[in-house]
Image (cartoon, rainbow, N blue to C red):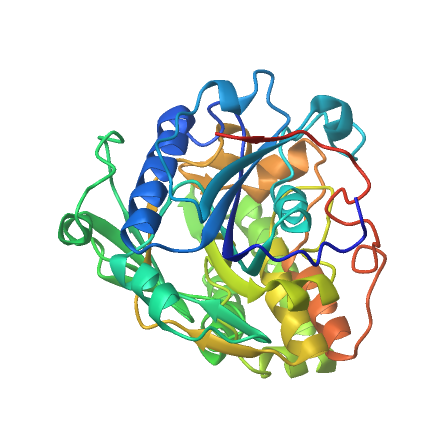
Amino acid sequence: MKPYNNETKCDFSFIVATRNDNHGGNMKEKNQFFINRWINDVKKYNLNCELIIVDWNSKIPLRKKLKSSFLKKNQIVKIIEVPNSIHKKFQNSKKLNFFQMIAKNTGARRATGKFLIFTNIDIVFSAKFFYYLKNNTNKNKTIYRADRHDFDLKNLKNYKISEDKIKELTTHIHKKNYTYDIKKNKKYYLRKTIIYILQYSYIRIIDVLANFLKFNIQINFLKFNIELNFLKLCIKRISINLKSFRDLININNLKTLFSKKLHTNACGDFTMIDKQSFYKINGYYEFEGFSWHIDSLLLFKAYYYLKLNFINLNFPIYHINHEPGKKYSSKGKISIKKIEKIKLNYISDQQLLNLINNYRLNKFDNNDKKINWGLATEKLPIHTI
C-alpha cells in the first residue's frame, strides 16, 4: 500500500468501524440496519459514493453475516478485514478487542472518495443530509459537524422509520456547548466553556470549603463526637479540588479554555473532511488505549495545524441509544474508575488540554507523526457485498 492513496473514484467515502460481536448491544441487527438504510438513501439521491466497513478483530468475518441489495454503478459497499494477528500487535490488545479510531484510519487509507465521512454503525442520517451532499458544493479545507439527537429504537428491522417518528422517540440532544436531557429538562455543559469554569471549578471549591465548616457534631453521653471519617472526606475533597484549581489557573490551560470553541460534542459519530486535509494531519491520533477524547483531538489538530474552516450543519444526525460496554461502564455511563482498575491507558482531561495546547504551539508527538498510520503497509483483505 502506498503511504498516501490519492486515488479518487467517487465523491464521498462513508467510513465506519465495527466487529462481529455484541460489543454495543444488538450489533448484528444494528450493522444490517445501517447498511439497509444507507443503501436506501444513497440510491434515492443517486449519490456517487462508497461505504467502507472496517471489520476489526472478528472471530467470524462480518461479511458472512451481512446482506446487501442491488446498488447503482456509482455506489459500492466494501468490507476491510483486520485480523487478530494484526490486532494483537497493539499495546493493550488483551484488554481491548477494538481500536476504533485506528480502524477508521485504516478505512481512510483505502478510501477513494474526495470527502471522508466518519460515522458509526448506530447513526441515522436525515433526508436533509443526503440532499445537502447531493446539491451543495462541498468545500475543501473544511470540517463539517452537526448536532446529534439520541433516540430509542427497539425494532431494528424498521430501517425505513420516518424522521417524524424518530423525533418523537428522541431523548437527548448534543449541541456544541451542552447536552440536553429532554426527559429531565436539564442541560449538561461541556468543559472548555466559561460556564464549566464557574460551575465545576470555583463553585465546587467554595462548596467543599463550606461543607468542611459544617462539622457534624453528635452528642453522645454529653460528649462531642466529631466524625473523623467526615473530616477525612472533606480534606480529601479539598485536596482534589485544589489540584483542579491549580490546573485551572495554569496559563496554558487558560489559553486553551478561552480559545475558539469547536463542536466536539459527539464528534466521533459524525465528522466530514476532505481526504487531502485528513492525510496532511495523519488522520486520527493513534492512541493504543481506551478511545477517550481521540475524536476531539482530530478537530483541534485540523484547526490549529491546517487552519481549517468549520461548518456546523443546521440539521442533526440521529443516534440509536445503547448501553456502553459493561466492562468499562457503571449505571449506563463510562466509568474512569473501572478503566483505571484494569490498568487500561486513556487520555485524561488534563492530558487532553496538554495535547490541545501543543497543537496550538504546533508541537506534535510520535502518535501524530506516524508515517504508516492506518495500517498503511499492511495488505488487508477487501471484500465487496
